[in-house]
Image (cartoon, rainbow, N blue to C red; front, side, top):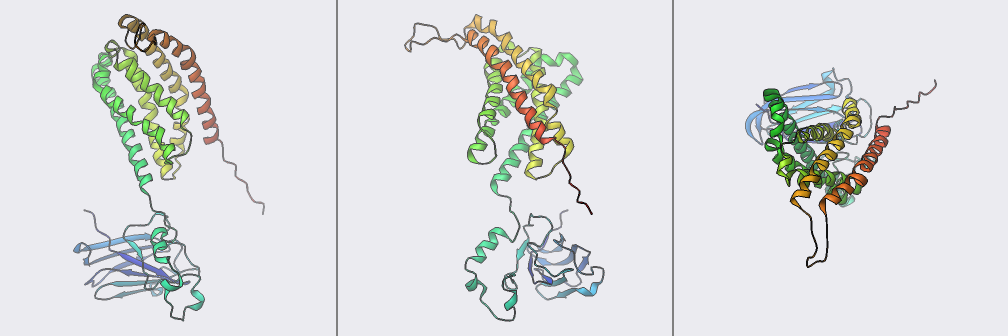
Length: 371
C-alpha cells in the first residue's frame, strides 16, 4: 500500500526554514528531525481525503542541534501543520532538498517567501510581485535550483528502457529455446524472434534523428551507417531470402547484436540519470572488442551466402533494356559491398570505439593538495 504525501509549502530566512503542511484535523503528528533529514507522519484530511499521510525530506544542509527538539517548532492548526527548523549555519539555501529533483508535492510558500536581496529590508512591508516583476513565473519554472525533468529526458528514458527490454526478450527466448532443444532450436531462430528483431531495428532509426532534434549530442553519420548496415543485413539479406531464415549464422548474429544492446541501453539510461557505474561503463566499452568483429563476420557470412541465391533468383537486379535505361546487378553489388564496406567498415567502427574506450576508461588523476 502506497501512503500518500501531503502538499508541503516551504519558505526560508537566513537562519530558519518554515514548512506549511496542508492537512486538516491533525491531532498528534509524528515529526522526526535528524541532522539533515525530516520525517513526518500524521492522520488527517488532505488531497486524498481522510488518510495517513507521510513524507521524508533529505535537506540541503544540516539542521542546528537536530537531536534537541527545542530548536524545532511544531504547531498544529485546524487546517494545517507548521514546522520551523533552525539552520545549523546562517546562509541562504538555493533549494530545500539535497537532490536537485523536486518532489511533485513540494511547493513554494509565497506568503512567507523572502529572498536574499530583500533580507536587509525585512521589517519593511513590501509588495514582492511589484518589486520583482515576473518572479512568480520564474520561480515556478526554476524552483530555486530544482531541475524538472523535461519531456525530452522522459522520452529518452522510455525509449532506452523499451529497447533494453526488447533485446533482453530476444536474448531470453533464444536462450530458453536452446536450453530446451539444444542445437535443434537454431534453425527456427528467425521464426520465433525475427519479428521482434525487425521492429527493434526499425526503432533504432530514431537514434539517427535524436541528434538532429537536439535530444542527444554527437553526429548523425556514424549512427546512420551503423543502423543502416544492420538494416541492410536484416531486411535485404535475411528477410528477403527465405532460405537464409534457417541458417545457423542468423542465430549467432542475433546473439551478438542482442548482447551488445542489453549493455548499451542500460548504460545510456544511467547517463541520463547522471550516475556512473564502473562495471556498466567497463562492459559498454569492453564487450565490443570480441562482439563487434564476430558480429561483422556473421554479417559478412550472411552476405556471402546470399550471393548465389541472388544469382539464381535475380532478386533486386535490374536488367536492360528498360524504360529508365538503368542496370543494376545485385550479386556484383554484394561483392563490392563485402570488399569496400564490410572490412573497411570494421576498421572504422573499431577505431571509433577504441577512441571512445580510451576516453571513458582512462584513469582519473587526483591532485592532492600539500598541507
